[in-house]
Image (tube, rainbow, N blue to C red; front, side, top):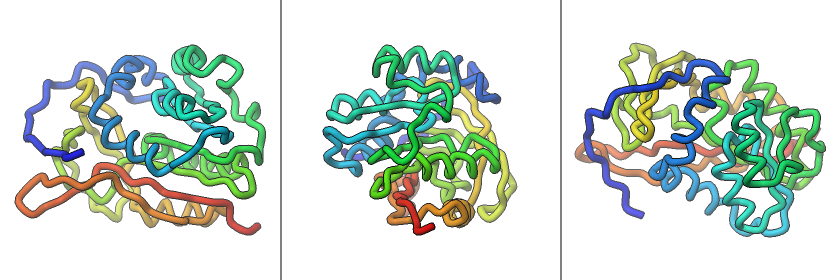
Length: 240
């Protein structure tokens, strides 16, 4: 796929997602983000490779956009989320028995693959740590986790193919909250920026070992300037 950047003023925001329960308001928009699916979802699913017959968990999987595709690839797919609307939609796609509203319902040490997609960049720092611990616990001994989120290295890029980032005076090294407008769906979110090194520290602290740092396909936004919208950590269990 060839990605082309086109400068656009956007259509303006019609909804604001500020709290976790607000995400239910954009359930339809999330399922219709075609460009995001091409850029992020296709990259992730390509990285996963052959998952037929594998025991897979999508952690914070929302309305099962990615999970449903993993199920189509033949995986025994489970999903965890806290949003009731998302759980209802996910249950229709995956079967209610494969949808978990409470992390305590997840069988620890059983999953060959755990994915966590675009979640850790919208939750507080303490929650990122908790998520990392839960992912480690869910993984089988030889399991692999993939944690993806918006690429913090493009924090000074005002417009990409998928987002319009509102002005911020913070530096890359600073943990901070910033506002962005999603071009697909036209809604606003508050996202939390942390440098990649900060995430490295969290994963190290909970015993997840980084096996790779992967970026989605680059494209040009200005003459000679290439960007990549998303980063995906490939992680395994470290030695306790």
